[in-house]
Length: 439
Image (cartoon, rainbow, N blue to C red; front, side, top):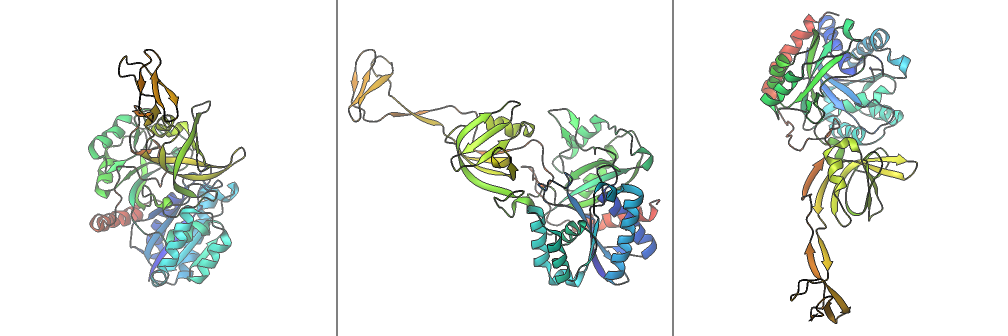
């Protein structure tokens, strides 16, 4: 039978990684339980605003064919899950609570709309564990574990446009070593493959941004829109250690899916049109925007070009803003900006006319009485002030943070809707890799 498997919360702040576990899991399911891989593993980024989750906040979905029932499959997966957190990530020692979910294909098809709705909620809202368990019971999902059940169930409902990420993993003896990568090789893949690979190198700080950090098993990850291009990029990147193994994941990264459902509640995404009332730049370079509608909006220095553009805004400008809603002790509620679109620029002022005789500024005689030159005393019959254009350094259009959140779509990026040929070819590569993986 065909099944989808969702897994989450298998990493810790010190060791391990849920993507790492997912490939080890596939390897064991292939070797010891004769499963077949039906689709690429799916790296599902969830709500980026949840304060108690890791920055990446990701779960994994696997699609497999298994000669057994879903209860048996859930038990097998969870046993490997417990083995991983005991021997690799020590997740429970750091407050992580792994979860597993398994659904049969026929139930997925029957409840696809409900599961997709749950996924969208997990991308944009805060979900209690009890609610996830009720959904699981309603749609016949077999669950194991604790809080990770939320992300596991959400992963089952992922649907829509996607991108890819090729992730390389380190040999265990290197996990505590410093990662080193050849900068020129990272720039080379940009030169050859952009925009089919993206977000690889920071040309302002002059450093690669594909390296992982900490003691987790991930060495680096390359995001892109073509499997064949990512495989070619893998051969170009130069690092100071041997790679243990690699895998390519489908992902909702770079799709803007977190803006599909909007709200002004805490930890949710917001998109709205505002009129600027006040701009202030605080010590350190962060910008605070006060809107005429009563919003307090933060544009952090770290957002780079977005922050620089925000400094050039002024009262009367009209924007469409994209950001996340956060609680604040000082302001009660703030919007942290990741993008804005300038709809109108306040590039006009009303000024007294210039004297046509001597070229000096004129002054009003009184409402409806005209203007008089301050120097030559010439009187004009003009009844209203004249419109004067102000040069602006900004233009209409979209400004975005230099550093993308995982879900944020770069302005140039076109996510994938379907790529069957490349994916079928890669599944055979992945199956071979899983058979050869030394456990």
